Amino acid sequence: MPPPQRPAHDEISAMVFQVAERLRHCFNAAASRLDLPPAQAQALATNRFPAPMRRLAEVLACDASNITGIVDGLERRGLVHREPDPGDRRVKLVVLTEEGERRRQALLSHVSEASAQVFTLPETDQRALRDLLARVVEARPEGGRPGCAL
Image (cartoon, rainbow, N blue to C red; front, side, top):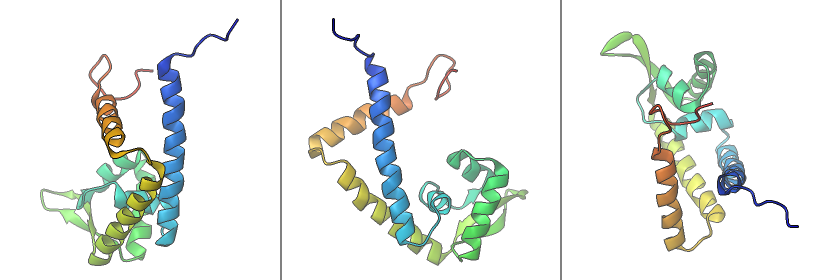
């Protein structure tokens, strides 16, 4: 008797984790090429600047106390500086410097080159996969919030 077939969502989850691991490896290699620790590279790559410290923490899914160390490191490298938010002087905005923008663009270019090596499907298949993943990302479980209802 053949083993019971796994639900498709279990197989999809396993494959998404495998692809995510490949992409993480590529991202970390791109960060290393630019002499950036992965957390600092992720802060540069995944945010729109200027950005409040709180939003950086949310995007990176880390505690506010951790984002302070990440931004301190970027500041020491001359890639960002902090300034008060004109709308709320209690809030600090993280602003890219010219060098920070150059490094960000170089990082995004390296990541794009690397991800092209992960996604070797024909262009039409890549677009279909993108469209399906967009539907998954936009889907909301009961309760209206994205994510896991556990």
